[in-house]
Length: 372
Ligand SMILES: *Cc1c(COP(=O)(O)O)cnc(C)c1O
Image (cartoon, rainbow, N blue to C red; front, side, top):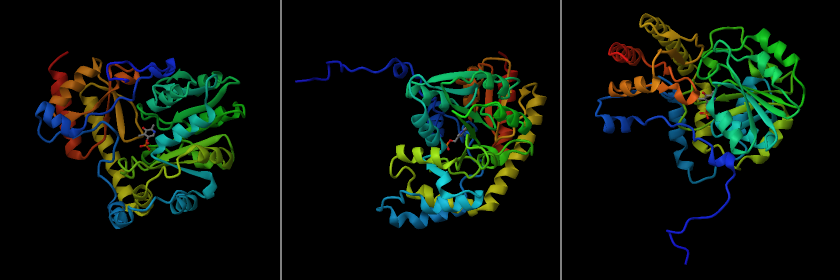
């Protein structure tokens, strides 16, 4: 009989054995238990500082009695609502289990061994990991002055390039692309690839001069926009996001997805959240206020602060980020050390409520003061 002590023998490609999993954040409960800190706060995953929309909560409660049914596999109402809001057709929208799933679909459809995806370094870690998971090649272009280096990205395009991922705003820097730069960039690109604008944080952006994917995709079939309900809408736990794109790529994405990839609660919650204008506005206002407060205080502490347009802020603390992260944990404040992003001296802080931001500053001040 095959027993437990015998090793399994199967082949796994090198690109999978060498794949480093996405680094998980620390759950709050774990921190309380492990470090014995009271009322820890989490400013690490760019979640909504106010919590979920109350309209979404109510809609989800009302939908509980239909949990025995499979979800609407076509996402009919959510697609129709989004299509109306964006001025596109339902066939130009693909729903996903978080916008992460759209990234996955795009890569599964367009990348395979021998094909390339371009992204910036650092940017959202998921792009590279999913490209590696299908055996594709990552072409990684360093940010220039914490911004996407569109000129170098453009130079890196080859006949094998299929996808270019641009998180706008960029995670972790929070910087945005300039519209004029993007126009010039598109002008120079061939037609055998797609440009994916990941707009997870677009609701927070203050500047007017950045490109919005939906405007571009209406005129340029190569442009795809990704949006999520996880950040400004406060529904990260539900897992729902969408892509706006030309019908042709959309058609292929629809083929690779599971029939019920977006669950009932997610569809119902997202629909209600789209009507909760007050929650969105409160969220955006609170984030901008918190951002201004944090920027000022962090600069007072002598940290180098990147000019973020999102709900998080990247800072250079000029010392080992892992150590600062650990010490902040002991103060009950969870931030993100950017070591996994290749920035060993940087931490990223999600904007929280006023009292959370203050506590974060106080903790950081204490940690930085207590030396290297
Ligand atoms: C948080 C984030 C997302 C959102 O992912 P979901 O799967 O929708 O929760 C997408 N892109 C970037 C760059 C992010 O930071």
